[in-house]
Image 1 (cartoon, rainbow, N blue to C red):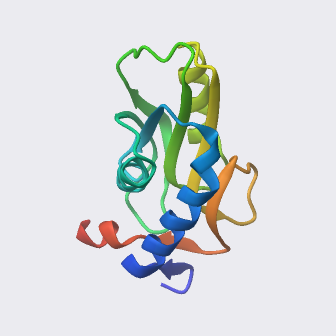
Image 2 (cartoon, rainbow, N blue to C red; image 1 turned 120 degrees about the vertical axis):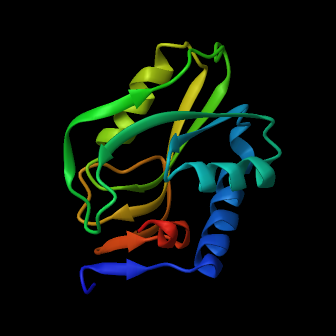
Length: 151
């Protein structure tokens, strides 16, 4: 457990509110949560920002173990969306290498949005990729409140 950091709902709430304030002037039209971990932060941001269009992309690159093991090949599943001319925010719970956010951004860019932003609730240091927005920077593997249900 010493390679992990346990986050509580209070920390998540403060971080999401801080991020929503940073995003207020970006005129986000669509929020896409990366399933599974990005779904909860993305859903909270849709409420705080008043964004009506909310979708998910499933990109699974790691096991549920803590610390996670990398899968041999990412699992990807999504439906084509009408994003043409829209400002899109892609949300994940944590980024370290950035591969998941980069892959999601590549998928979304094919749908011709006006602008694509990436956001991670947590940036795991040292990071190979920095999203456009992140809430917390930590040097340990984060355990989110919703992950406590995983057995």
